[in-house]
Length: 403
Ligand code: HAM
Image (cartoon, rainbow, N blue to C red):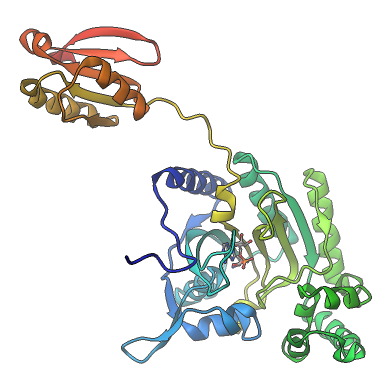
């Protein structure tokens, strides 16, 4: 029997209800904040991700679904959403147009990771990207938006915050850090030896315990910020304080993608096991230039939908729509007709097998219908339909002409 690929799941109706509830809640919040929907292709040129997410990242280095298409193009399934949105932003010349452009999106992402609880090879993100606002107020807006979405879904979280500096302070810090890493000699893991020359700050979130204990003495980026980055970071913290959004400063939060500068943040949950990041984001003011666009400040985030699904508290489901059935074969055409008129405005589910009233009522319960509407010999003779309101527990005979 053919099975779905490892780390790739079907979403069946019960889960889909949660999925749909999440998308509609998050989209409503995004629209309230003035964001517009954008859809970009699942397949892009591999070069897009190499130049944005970064060749030294695990995502590009180890996890891409990459292949040559029939036209000989080097392509891959998108591992994340930001790069494609930035590509679209530049391709449609919105960078040249100037002004503020705010987008939201959702859909599948693909990373060839080792599957485990909360870590899939095909997973879904809901993300937003904002272009054209350099003010740190926009960074705060991003965080407030995630907090709003999680609040509407009844999900608790911890927020981790860091600043990754910019082109003024990062190079000097990087040199300092490389000096420190070199002082560790061979004591660090192989991955960190490689990171030392490709992207030294990634050593800070190395999962190796020995490395972690060595790095407690590493210089902290947060103590090496230039004046501009420091003042923005202070402003961000005070905006969050004013909005009563609690945060923890995590100096090792470097994120797994290379395009960030200044603000970096992650929302984590303590209730879903080791893959605890439920959302991540930050500022990426240099990325548009890197991809040959006109320099434009930008900031965004993405939520991991699968990790949220187990945490969502669904509102109590309310009975809705009609269940319609016949007591005998002859009444079925009339039932179908009645269903057709209901369907113009409400849900109508027809049971084709004629059966006793009691069994129809059970069927209506099973699909959580508000009304159970039945036609039998008497109703047919009198041109009526018997309707029970399963919330009010009231019954009535309604003339078919008025149904
Ligand atoms: P990211 O941190 O790589 O950021 O992913 C965002 C979220 O996607 C994570 O916090 C996690 O919930 C979920 N996620 C990531 N990998 C997996 C996986 N293998 N299985 C299940 N869930 C996963 C980004 O992708 C950036 N594009 C976010 C961003 C937008 N930054 C700026 N704008």
